Image (cartoon, rainbow, N blue to C red; front, side, top):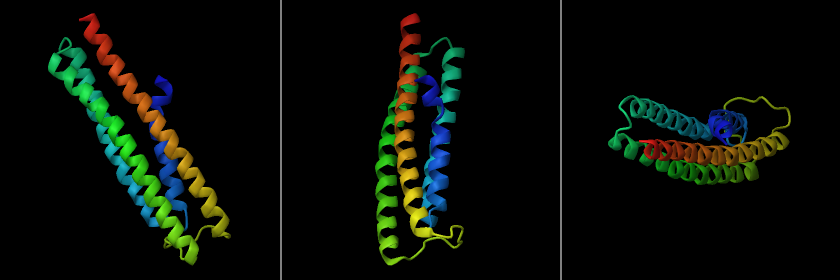
Length: 151
């Protein structure tokens, strides 16, 4: 579970790339870049807090902050999951029915079949990202709970 939770960034990158390369989602895939940036900032914040937590002899204030950050990961993962599915799905349905590409570039020779494949890839990796972030939150909460028992 720890290894799966640590590979969240791979799922986020592949999901972002498939959304951006999808001819009918295209530029709306930039929402995934914003999600990825926010998640990176949250993870960096948590890593520094855990290091300070271990350095400062398991300070109770830092333990509470790390626990709150673990809960925030749950909330952000679920919120981004539903926003991503809704935004990509609605944009895809609107653009696909009109055969109106949302990208300024044309990569695929058959954009209709590739767009469906890329949308499915994006949804699968969005689900994997959600599960991996939940695993990451569980790992963080366990870390804090174990240190609280040892102290």
